[in-house]
Structures are given as structure tokens and as C-alpha cells.
Length: 403
Image (cartoon, rainbow, N blue to C red; front, top):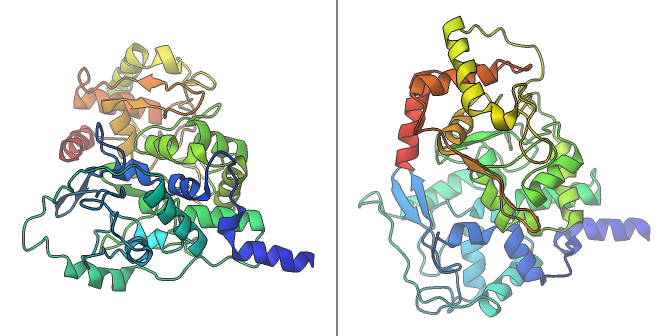
């Protein structure tokens, strides 16, 4: 009997969720991070208008409130399911894959129905017109997206693995499905498609550049369970902190998940093998930096960084993350690190946790100064990352302007 009960729960991962302060619909809405993409800065809740850069131009998220004129108020459940799982709107138009339907296809029927009921019954209608894309004709023609879907997306629902625990399967469901973590953390192929959709392939969650940021590998990062849970719940842990686009994920989504579900996510992520799990693991690289550049980097660090991060780069527990062994500092792709130094960063706003903010230094550092201080950080305190050039700083500034 116990064996039968275990298999039943594994087959229905959506039923395991628990957060007594929310309905199942609101919970899956939070787990799916709908608000981050469908509520524009200073815009009305879930009325769309968030801008997304694509190789063809800018597109904008749509109104998903139950407004019958501009939203989804006159959509049937089947209309809703087709859009969320297949990326096809009620009027037959193919949605741009900025909408993570390749991941949402894995949502269970129970969660899908609960999400639909929540949006239709508990969300306030907003009479806000949808903004058309900035993509000009003929590139704006949608039918090629249908061919793209057939070539690059999967249609299978989430399938629990019988060789894994209930907790592992729950974490896998949340990461692969509603959490759509692969959208940012999985590298893209030639057709801009995600290279994989689950842990069966080593590319899944192995790190990727998207929309002007680099999302690092989250395959077995070496973080403890407690660190992963704290980062997803508070936006920071004792020795780590989140900044950049991930702050919206925490503030709008993961901070609302139950402790049991956060533990399940941490269990799943920690179980994936990855020889690149830590940028400081393995053989240390021999990095050669000119003495004049090192001296300038040290001067800039002591002038602008040491007050918070310390002359030894150890930071301050629970407030300022250490730079030694830091995942972002040591990343093979330094894009996010460069952006944080140029633009600054802020930890997420979460329940009972005020954000901490790092100022940006684009206004005061030249491209060479920025490269020198980053190279000083990336070659000190046990860090052995590749050197950054002033040209990369300049290129990143151009990326920022485009996005």
C-alpha cells in the first residue's frame, strides 16, 4: 500500500504544493512568474507592455487580465491551454517564444486549470490595449514561428522518474515546468532554441547569455541546500547575493514558494553533475597580468570597492557577498559581472528583507579602469578567471544601450 501511495504522488507533482496563504491558482501563478513578464514598470498589474529585445526587433508582453476587450476575458479554458502549452493565441496567431510555452507544456492539468481559474476570477480586469511589436513586415509574419515550434520544442508533459524520490521529482517539475529556469540558464542553438529541456542532457541549465546578461550554470553549483533556499527566498544568503534580472524572479516568484518546494528545487539542482559547477574548481589557470594594469586595478579597487567588500575581498556576512570564489566574478562569460560594475546592482525586495544596493561606476571609470579593476578582482584571493579587455567593456556598454 505504501508503494502504491508513493507512485501516485510521484505521478501528480502538482498536488504536493503547500502554501496555506494562497489558493492553488495563485500559487502556480507565482511559481510560473507571470507577473514579472506581464506587468510593465509603472504599468497596471498584468496589463502587459514589458519590452523584450529579439534579433528582429522589440516585442511586448500582452494583457492577461480578464478584460474582454484587450485581455483574456473571453478566452475559454481550451483557448488558454493552447496558448500556454502550444504558444498559439485564441485568434490563431503564434506567440513569440519569449513566452516560455516550451516549458509550460509540462504543467499538469490540475495546475493549468487552477491558473486559468485564478486569472479569470481573482485578477482585476485592466482595460489596457496591447502594444504591437516593433518588428516590421515581412519579418513580423507569424506563421514561421509555427515551423520553429515543430522543429525545436517538445510537446510531452512532465514525466516523473521512477528512480528518483518524490522530493526530487517535485523539484524537477517546478524547475522544468512553471519555473521555466531553462529559458535563461540553458544555452541556445542556431535557431535560438533551448538546447535541452531536462537534466537528461548536460547542456540543460549549463549557463547562457540572453537579453544582454549571462545566466550562469546552476547545475550542481556546490551551494549547500541552505544557500540555495536562502537565495530563492530572500535574494541573499550568508555569503552570496542575487542581482540583475534574477531579482525579479525572487521578488515576484520564488519568495512565495513553500519551504518544502524550495527544498525540492535545491534537491533537484544539487543532483545534476557538472564539471563546470564551480568556476574555481579543477586546475588553476595561469593568468598573466601586466604590473601597471595590476597596480591600477588595485588602486581602483581600494578607492571604490574596498569600503564594502574589504581589502581582502571577504565582504560582510548576510550583507556584502565575498568576491573570493564568487560565481559571477569567476564566470567564463563576464557579461553580468561587467554590467553590475557599470550599472550597479540591488538585491531583491522580499518579505522582511530590505534590499541592499551597489552603485554603478560607469560614470567615473574609463573602459580601461573598469577592465583593470575587474582583472584585479578576477586574479586575487584564489580567483583565476580569464582577463577582461577594455574592448569587452565597450562592447558591454553598447549591449546595455540596445537593451
